[in-house]
Amino acid sequence: MLSENIKAIRKSKGLSQEELAVKLNVVRQTISKWEQSLSVPDADALISISEVLETPVSTLLGETVVEAKADALSVIAEKLEVINLQLAQGKAARQRAVHWLFLSLCAVIAAIFAVLIGLNSPYLGWDYSDPEIAIAGVMFHAFEWLFIRIAPLALIGAVIGACLTQKKV
Figure 1: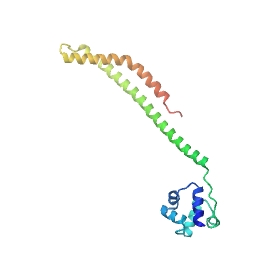
Figure 2: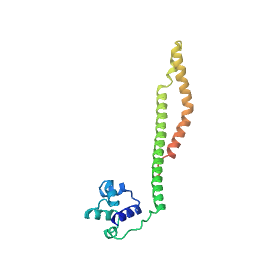
Figure 3: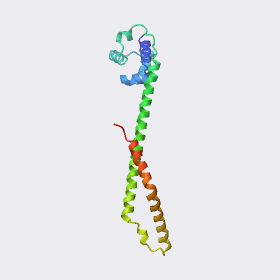
Figure 4: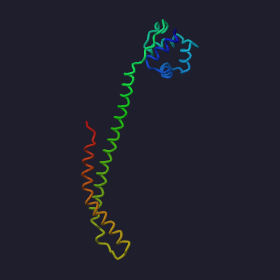
């Protein structure tokens, strides 16, 4: 009777042998032996079992308990709640990463603007008779020309993106 009751109540609570063993600080094989009537829990263990299973000791020792199936809908709802929480945490982490990416882009654009302003187009005074200097000057000028035209749009986009991805309080 005791072995059948432990097994039936454990299953009705939706616990595996391993989970019950962890809660009782015993090995899973001990639970298996109790449920197969190969051994019997001592008085202290019986009290612990009744506390973990939230069942009176008299019920454990009494008549056979009809195995009540765990409410499948509530179990599924709990699992879905955990999944939803994990998805929400993942979404929040991605939102933070994108937010910092936009802020970093703003900082990089501002730093490059500051460097270009500070340099004040030094290539304009270079001697272009040397081919290597001529190539470097043309590349530097092309970069500056493209950057000055594209960077303001990118900066505006990054600022808007940073504002939109900011965590709401």
